[in-house]
Image 1 (tube, helix red, strand yellow):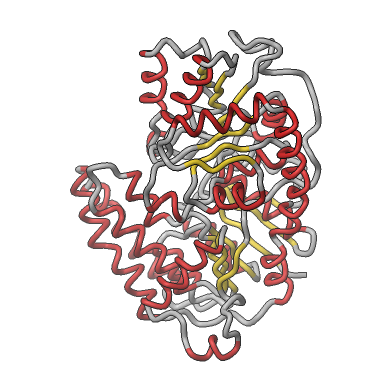
Image 2 (cartoon, rainbow, N blue to C red):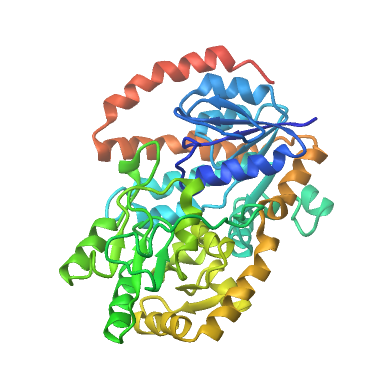
Length: 448
């Protein structure tokens, strides 16, 4: 049986954001056919998932390299340069899960500073593509992005093209998915329970975090419009904090959203913020106690190539969605009649779309029925099929494109040095040099 190692940059367990959720759900799907290990930082817990747990962070070079040597396939959303270089030498297949195009997201995340970060992210993504036997992503738009980048970097070679002119054997779509079972109705957690929300009040739910590249202000303005029109609507942000290895590194705009709502007297009245993070297994109660799922973003590159993972929870719970247009999820909502996709920043249209669902129960029921009809096609067991097939078929691992690998790994060091200068952390780099030399001595001559 194929042995598959999933490597997570963040802890897995009860409280997770999108990246570790994807690791665990894909690991579950692959475990139906393979022996699976999940490597994740402390503290981690795989619960009842049929996988083995290896507690290790991306910094645990020796532990992860040893684990890679004892598996047939390694799946990761991004390996550090040195570990990537060594994995590229092993007789194992590497799957790069690039559902999050970091070189574009970081353009929004870094703000006005951190000029070296986009270059590092680009080189890192190039490195993953250079080593990968299979690249998976979340949408056809993302697939086009990766194919374009690989083509311009000389990573679409004639031999593989002749074997598969579609190139889907090497770059394939594996979206975020839905759990196998629909959410179960439980105790109410919002209506008649959350301070200020009445038993019969309509609830708009923002089901994820409030990141810098998202637009929380438009839905806040929209709910203010709804209230002025006589609708007893409430907007609930399900998470403000974010579980992560280093939460301070996550670019949030939650403070600005909270201040905006407070200045207008909306916070606690019709706009509500959960200042923690709802555990993954508890999110169903909040979804089922809501009426409409909402999400909004600005008009920029990050939105074009994004895949709003927590919007999938709307579909799981049968909720109509009102979202911003311009990304893969917005196109799906519009194409399948799952709610409305609104031009970025148009709070009037956003409010109107929500009002039409709140006020017209027949329209709401028909929309919710279309959502429920779509949901089975998005289950993890279905969307993960290309990855499961790759793991079970076990093609021989290919040799990575050395020029691209060298450019993406050794080529990162000037950017790392520049980033250290910006952060005043040159001393930290000096302490790494002996570790790198030691690794070369221990592993440099080994080839599997």
